[in-house]
Amino acid sequence: MATPPQNVPGSQCPCPSCTVAGIESNLASIPSAWPSNSDEKARYAPPQPDADTFANQQAFLDYLMPVPIESVEEDSKKCPICWKPYGEAADPGFDNSEQPVRLKCGHMFGNKCMLTAFAVPGTSTITLEPLAFVPGSRGYQLGQRLHSYLRESGALETDDDAVAFTEMLHTRRESLTELFG
Image (cartoon, rainbow, N blue to C red):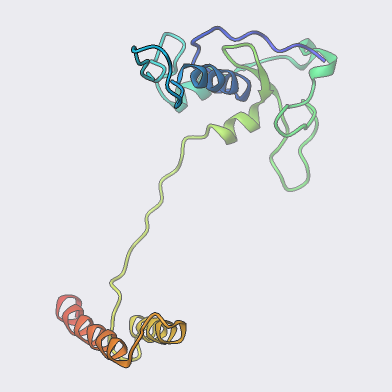
């Protein structure tokens, strides 16, 4: 099996091999929880960006360098993430044919796996609707279920607690109805 290229110390390459090496290096710099004989305390400092650090995810994706399959060593012709051989046709119904790409550090991965792992996240919108507490509404049903659960679980120690909880629900319902209609 081909030996992976050595990473440059301090490199900010995001590939799995370099990330593990960076984590191990950072862990070694974290001070021990056990007291030492030294009065001087070392403080953890996170790695700082350097010339090898990408400005953003898109810059990293743009930098992926395609490699001709013929130039890849015979024992390294599979993506180390998904194990799909480079250049093999996509599976039916999937867009998963892998082509080798080389990172700054020299490690090689499949282009689709890198695009999936480091894709720029899309945006999504979630519209929140106010919860109604009028009888028959989902909010009211939720309150009734909570009331039943608390009573059955013993969280409401006395009937006075149950009455207080029910009154709180009705009060809350009335004030929320005033606010949200």
